[in-house]
Amino acid sequence: MPPELTLPEAVKSIRKMWHMTTTEFAREIGVAQSVVSRYETGTRSPSRKVLLKLILKAREPERTTIRAALSALRGKPIPDDETIRLALQVVKDEVSLERAAANFELPDRARFAHLAGEILAERNEVDESLNDILWTWLMTGHSPDRSRYFRDAARFLEIGLVPNTRETREAPGSEPQSTTENQVRKD
Image (cartoon, rainbow, N blue to C red; front, side):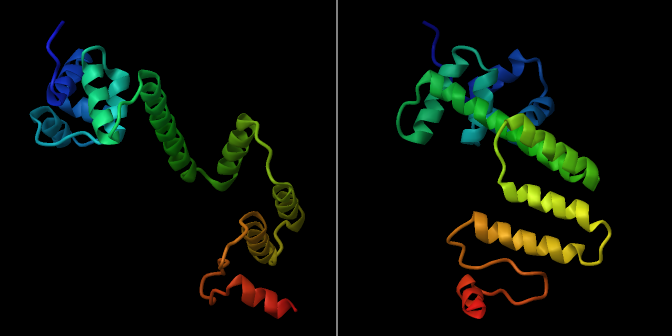
């Protein structure tokens, strides 16, 4: 049975197995090059997120060492299948965040098309009020009241879809009002 690796040895072994420089490896796992160097010298320990990324790149015995580090962070042993599931979720979340960040750089129409595609791909139902908002957008054309319509729709969604909200967001420059104040004014 081969001797167990230390965590710094495991990190270095994984990097070398993938034939990467510390700079390339750092980019791959989402940290600075200097951080990889500190991982490899043992002056810094990888975070849970980095450990989960590393386990997907590791083979035995590196995987055993990383799983032990994850178990130590958790305070109890983590089964192999759960470790891989958590690691895949981290990667999936990062890909989603990267897509979302790239999406913000798109022009409005392209961003809308991308988000609509994401909704369809998820095969989840959307609240029917979204249809009403889109219909309002189409019907108001270039009306000067368009922004007011959408501000009202946003308030409706915030209040209607998020019960127990103590405050509603107001337009910039206006004073926030609690929902109870709004209800009193309606009475």
